[in-house]
Image (cartoon, rainbow, N blue to C red; front, side, top):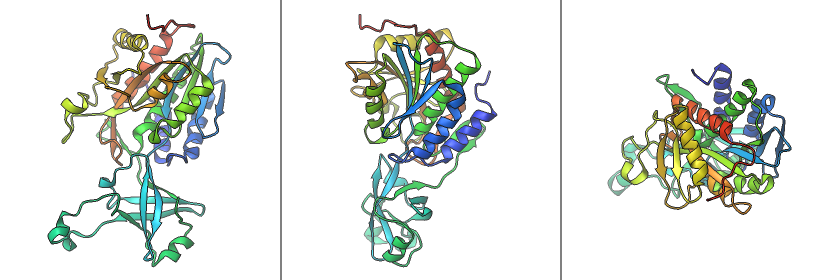
Length: 359
């Protein structure tokens, strides 16, 4: 039976279409909080903008489910005398995809439209024919005649830049758009709390549903909120790579396919007993899963929770994603639903004071 309904898909579309760049996540956090508010008992926000809802507050045993709210973007870095704008990354933005993209420059005067320009193919001759995008040569054109006009628009060094893009559904099968990494994770945990409320589930512990900021620049929001909540258990959801598209090597990156279910990760930061509970739950509830391994860190907020507060039993459930850090990230609808199901069903298996000691 499908988990998603028209209300949840409408929220997803609104949430994905809204800009939420690293360090400037507030508008997206407001949307997310408004959606989960009917399903939680309390909520709070920390100094840098991580928002969390609380279910069954006041228990000594605390469990976190977490996604991150921020998306990659650019900062205005330099404005030429001719009125062109050079940028630096805010998170892991890919310079290779920038040319010909439309952008929104966020200013105190509102959104200013622009484009990443690129020399026409006719003009690239000889050695210039080998020209490829780099962080040093990509530039934004806002149609200004000079630097003074750019400044008059309200654009200055430090303004954040996001791609102009809207979510679509491809072949009635894939959600497509920018920033599925990882607002799709925030969406999944929001759906989990909706299901808990609608199914009248009474948890024996306090559940914190956390939408962290600043993951894209080093897991910073998770680092801060882990110290504030001090949970005993953390289940993190993020995205992973679908490695069965052209130019990707499964032997190197891992063997993961969209439509085959969420991926669970083996890694030093992942607690073996919690991971086994998740795997057993998937088997019992007939939820398909895939497996991958990380040789050191997972590169996700799992690491921040695991190594906080003297050690927190942590695990990672990942959504297979095509074309990560582009404007056409793709996630299979069935994988999204199965991420939600797996987190939901695992929460029902955790008991108050659950023993996650190493042995």
